[in-house]
Image (cartoon, rainbow, N blue to C red; front, side, top):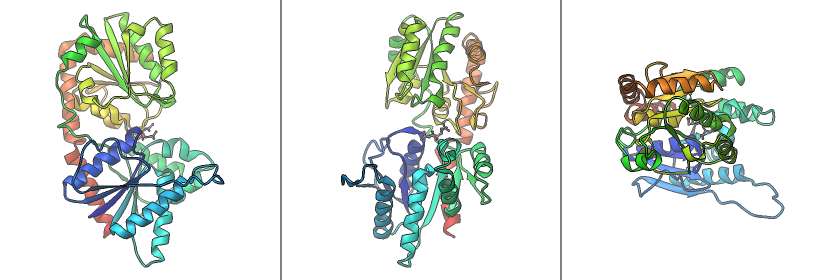
Length: 374
Ligand code: GMT
């Protein structure tokens, strides 16, 4: 099969999922064409069957605002036509599903056809898509896609109700390469981050408001009242400065390690004990999945698709948004009981292996492509 994939290539979980999917499809013999404005950052080396087509942007002074959606449509047209794509799979509805729809209409005029599949990831549905300026366009683009998938049951239900959509949406969850994200030891980073043998809490995100990263610092403050602990924060984004300020204000600067953006996630997770995800909105929680795959228990909120990913009192604990005290109590509970910790750690890994391994989920996408092509 020849598959085009459009995604946000440099930031966020939707781009990670799209790129990992492309890599897996290519390994399974499909030809994959990425169409985007930058090279997907998870394409770390050369892969057979993977091609990249960059969207070129015109800088004409009259265009005060970027015409990316239209430039993307043009590039989609070119790739569909010359590479003879069977399927164009777009990740994150805005504006990708709309650009794809337009490309499909233009291609139709040449008596050609292409199947458009849209994967909904999160704020394209729960936040940005609901803005009055976007809502009718998102609804239309979803309705006009040949196939639509959502990364959790929660997101599917939200889409059907918030946009009054009647068509079927298939839930295909996020997945992980359990051979890469696997349990291991990283004594070097552990000794660097926690030289006195303290426990290590970890969080990775793009530091947007919805992630409530400052809650992780407040959790650390509470945890440290009971046991020695450190916090590793990975990633960068709008809330980082505020988090650094909070760490200083709470006198925790020495105990919070801001690593910024990092590629070596497995190594960092393997130096840590518990993953924190205090989000106020999370349609799936890919970074928690990666942590679970490394055998880390997760302390999270109960929002969105998180209860579909992790099981309360089995793989970690779930609390209400903002309930820092409870999340800290759960963290201490796990970190002071080795037997319980080991059971939760094994449960996390097992749950990922049986439900979210790439070999479980990628075939679901391939079957779905076949179904739509029929
Ligand atoms: O929706 C977003 O905010 C962006 C998107 C991304 O690109 O990071 O995140 C969403 O997609 C991820 C991959 O499917 C999910 O794991 C995240 O839970 C989801 N984020 C939110 O719902 C806030």
